[in-house]
Length: 327
View 1: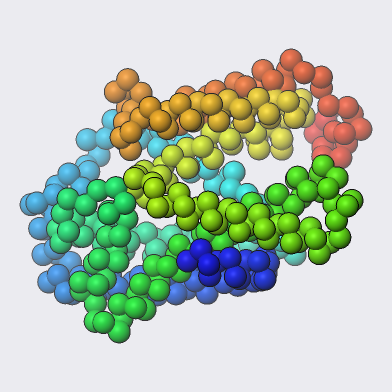
View 2: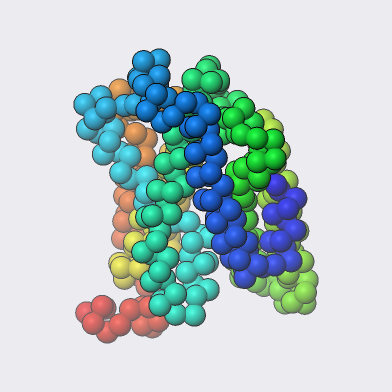
């Protein structure tokens, strides 16, 4: 997967990655629904399978009264992470017009339902077929279910759908990190003065290679489940949301406030990540997830860091705020 992503990201750039994402998403959606139908039929039907889940693993079907209010409220902060995804910013800024977003915004909730519902249900049903899977082993539950219940020729196609879903996220993230390296380090600090444009592109590609190699090596040693890693990743992104809010709406915000906010998130996130092993472990058993405190620390650092440092010059504000906004 890392090798294929490396190939089309380094040679296809943003346009190639966008088209690859479109194709990969269509493949995963169609094959995911197909895999779900085949597996449910093989298990004896949807209703009988759900009855087995209720009898054997009712804990997987968490009812509302079993969720602590603060726990549920804490989880509502996780979607803020989407506001800090650099690869989303990159795709948005590449559009020629806002009209390009009309259809995707309308179809987005539908596509999410098509992708997530079958995937989650297959994971739930997989606990009946392969009980006791934990950590990295649990990450392969969909592939195990496909191999056990789909015809051989379809197993490869459905497995390709799973890999397509992985690549459609990895490629955009890697591309954005490589672009940030080129723009914010190579060009920002003046290294490009001693490099041709071709050399700058090569530097970005080498950095992409290093990122993918790091991702691959981390996947070999990580003992956490995909869900647990996802929650922690989204926690870090969500906690950085005050930086974007301040940059866009607060004219008194400064770069030092942003730096303080990022530092506060890095330190608090690292502490909670290595201190809280359980994916649903809350602070003091109150039901409050670590994201609440990390987000609060981020916002406080952003405010204090901006107020104690020199306000931006009016000439600088004029670049980003209208006269009405600045008044």
